[in-house]
Image (cartoon, rainbow, N blue to C red; front, top):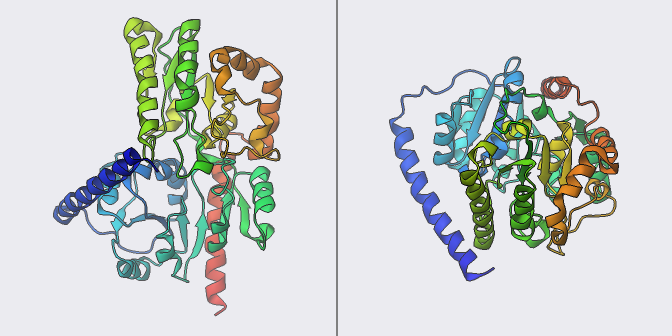
Length: 405
């Protein structure tokens, strides 16, 4: 790790400590009533505010769950709890348990039947200690990132909800001593069921969403393209004149590596300069936490080896996927991403050719096959219904297992 990256980490830790202290004081003064009664579904989020995008993407789906099973969010950090309480898009009660021992009273009082996890945070084990609920890993996206979507950590949970056959095959290839048939439940990708009111600001231009991943938590997960492709790719789109360019960097960009944050800033500067020169084109740099709205507004998506690319596929969007510039960020030949014609950094100036192929060429046909393999039936509402039904089935199973004791 470089000295600049170490300094980024030190500064981030200091800011977090200050934010926690401030949030703790504000929560202590809050008049928000404590939730009472049973909550069938407890969503456990042990991570920081920076990673709340992983949880927010589930809000609309959890609303459907909440209509049948009351939903409660439990966090481990005061600033995260405060952010969720202040988030107008979050309809669920939020509690905070900063110590392990503070979790016990919440479990005893609210008696959750299932606990949901959106990531593999190391503090998940504090909740997994409790044997009365059944524990379900739902993740925060469908992707081929090695060690995330098919992590050995899945063994810690009673069940894992997966999007489709591609996830099952990926997990079967990677894990040993894991009973996929018993532990994996297919629910599709319910996030794409959300309807958005989209108003185009670009006239006759084709809206291209460029949404690269971040630098990753380690070199093997360094799939982000902003540093290797970004400037050349965006300049090519802007000079073409046919496209409205929307640049949406990953919320964690620069979290580990300051040079990646600098790369995103450079790409942003190019887009904002073009927006200033041609206000009617609608070019923008988006920082909205609602990625679904960005996706719905796009005609075509450019993404990296990430969940964004497959979300675009699930939403029925043409998508171009970049080739990782980092040699250790491997795209396996048996992975879903290997089915795409990946855009190398050296070919970024020719991105328009890749877009044309994704819309109406051989790549478009490949994308149709990928959609069925990864997500099955993508008819609106099917995945949400499958998710809610799966929650109900696991909750019923939990009750039946406890009754047998």
